[in-house]
Image (cartoon, rainbow, N blue to C red; front, side):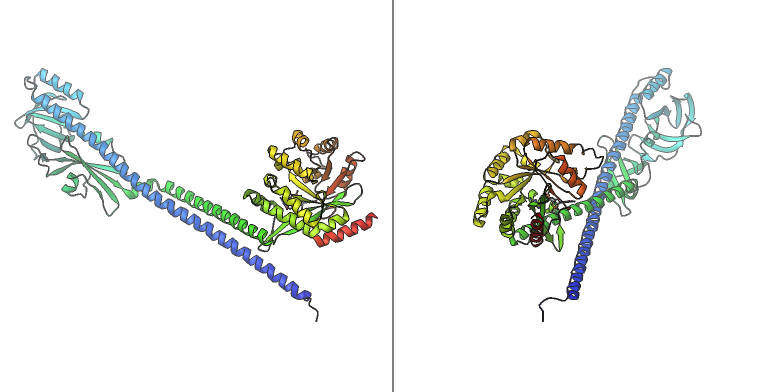
Length: 545
Ligand SMILES: Nc1nc2c(ncn2[C@@H]2O[C@@H]3COP(=O)(O)O[C@H]4[C@@H](O)[C@H](n5cnc6c(=O)[nH]c(N)nc65)O[C@@H]4COP(=O)(O)O[C@H]3[C@H]2O)c(=O)[nH]1
């Protein structure tokens, strides 16, 4: 029996592996989705709770502010009333004379809250600031509230305003009509007030204006902050200058209603923020786990190398190959642009480069020596800073009995232009016999001064320029300039990303006769495993004979 697996069995296995990869991808997607939704829910709930808390605090602060504002008006009324009563009672002017009326009017003018001042004797009113001298019976209702020296009447007919009613204080021959409309200016739903006056023994309270409140006398007099079950918040505050108290009331639900849209919007914003944070954490987790897996792959050597041929455009001979790294993570190839960038960011690119160099020499060492071709490997700026890197390279080559000129080193313009230490390292690598290639030329710091300073052996024109050939792209005119500059500086040009014969023909014709120009791209071969490369090299040298 042959040890080989029948084609149908291997196809079934391949199909199953694809299915399980697909299932895993779906599970990962679902988990990510659930995490983001959970993040949104947590974010929304936290914002809701914070919002509730802030709303309650704001409601209490608003109630306190408002109650104090009403109290200050009440205190002002109290002090104006007392001062006016005292002034008239001790004016020493003839009762209801012109002089006294004038004096009473002056007192009225000074007050903002008193509307009318009158003089009484027995149960009659004899003059008022508004009506002058008169003689009318006082309404003899029982007062609503009695102090030792004062009586307070609510809603009694007014001499100054026939048909109208108002609040009156009577005390020792003086009666004052005062305005509680003034308080109306303090109406400010959803906060409301009730004004109380308190007797001198401070055991009795009387509601002067405003609705009844479900608070006990004690609660009012001790100045409590009370929350009733129906969501009403009460704050009582008593004056220390005047026998009066204010109870402020705020309906928490009415208060919340005012901020409903705001709370809803912040909840949505909190949800979005939660989702965004969950997403960022997931990304962070994936990057972290990608990093861990990549480090493990380097340690265990589960990375792969592929090689892409580089051809002399004049002769069609394969003159070099570029080694490119491949990594399969959980059954899927990760782009080198992604994992190389990750290794650079997390500063373990050195381990990758060393792995590549060791394995290139192992896989391809004898082949390149026999075929007289060069292999180029990508190195990073981190490698240039690594003082042990040149010695490592030399050591690997010596063990394999290879010469340094067989290994070319490709570095991007960015890493090559990174300060004088990079220049020194490049100089040292060149002196060891390695050729230096500036990769992706034209996309980074294409400055003449650094090219002159570093004197690399070759520049690799970036694929984006190759694609402009035969097009109207704005960068198309740059290509001849790069070629001319390279020729003047005596540098080899390698054109990257040649995909069509027209591009190859263009570049071949664009350099002066005798100047070398190499090309790399799908036209000559995609990156391939070492076994395929060996066959290609064999075919290529056969056609060159
Ligand atoms: N569309 C198109 N693409 C072409 C064509 N010819 C070549 N390519 C692609 O262009 C890239 C050339 O490599 P690079 O410029 O050094 O750019 C490399 C290099 O910067 C980096 N990289 C790859 N392997 C390594 C490595 O071992 N070490 C380091 N430091 N970087 C590496 O990742 C980059 C991407 O590598 P790859 O994905 O293998 O992509 C390769 C190659 O597959 C073409 O005709 N058309």
